[in-house]
Image 1 (cartoon, helix red, strand yellow):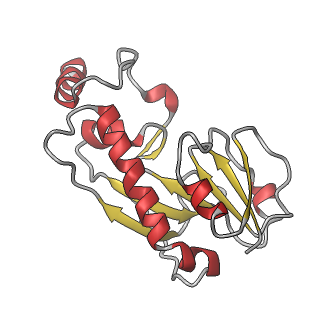
Image 2: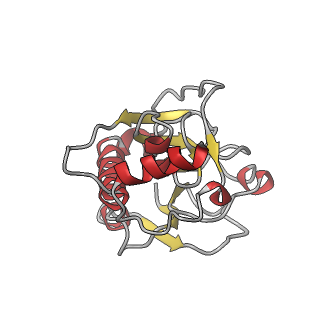
Length: 189
């Protein structure tokens, strides 16, 4: 492994880039939409706001790896941490291969997460999930680099949300989760 493209978060948002670089690997990092990735040994996606089209994915030596802060197949797409609480689905983190459908690729590794009681806001639980997925990635880095894991197809059920699904009133990630759940239930009536 010599060259990795890391799409999404930068060094101020994740410790993974520096961790990979400290292993002597060149890391190209961008959050911008990219048109070519064929010169990289591996593409890692974490916090990337663009969708890789199927044509681009097909030019790669192996499927890109996405770090998603949900317990797939639940809460594919946008704002997975919010929807896990609102819909009472499992919280967790998943590292999966990217295919042509959003957050539907085979699972490499995943972990269900339970939060300490004092993690009572979306911002606190989000930060906790980021730490959990970074820890999972670091613990499985050799298997990821060597692709020595056994990919597991996702179950066909689950949930998916678009950015526009987020309620208009949800604009404060420091809101208490219990308050948001109550508010969401009341708007459903």
